[in-house]
Length: 332
Image (cartoon, rainbow, N blue to C red):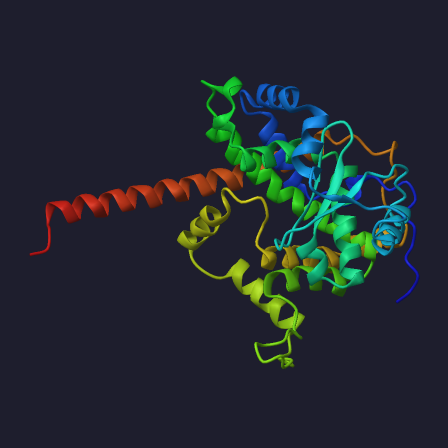
């Protein structure tokens, strides 16, 4: 492939998804949210977070997984990021990675992820996690991971607070922040097919595994077919299907892989990706004011959220009415 271009002084605004900024703005406006962040961050602190998420992991360096270390160096160079967040590998079959921490975020990538992806797809994931760091996502994402690991309701200093709206908003933002960093991952590797293939393989595995008899399956997969499936998922169904789609991910940290591939494909087709590669992007320190952008995105996101809430309310009312009717007219 052509030599990757160094994106000198690129600002995270270049890749941040409007829904990410809107969800973040909405989350910050929820009463009590800032207090939860302060209390959780103050209770755990930087050292505790490292013990929690990197205590049993292996730190990558020149003498520890040097090939992965070199790949990480290339990603840092491409994204022109001056600091080097610590990178850890942890042993687990789960296909995942994360950027966590407060003052000094670090990156943890699971061995299951490394085992599934090839070298260039790993570049995409490293760029994705670095994107979280550059965008300043780590603090809120760490709060969400603590929620998953421990549960906010198990933290005594949060007793008496109304937490459900905060949880829902936090997970919603978490998923939207993934869409932003998916773009950062693409920019770090600069090959759209590789970036989309990474999520394709995370959704359905990689062909070439051996069966119980040790025979290669010699099966075939098609990114084009997966893109068609993604379009079908996004555009198909009725209003009630959209409600179920929301409920399916309400307490998940990641969007479905079909959605992520579709979003990347849409961004590439829009021309924005190629404009950035061509050098047309905001630099760090001279971005235009974002207040109007935040406002527009929040208004749009608010309309979407209200529509989803109305659909959920209608679903609940219909279920209640059906139950009431069934109780009034039980079958003999």
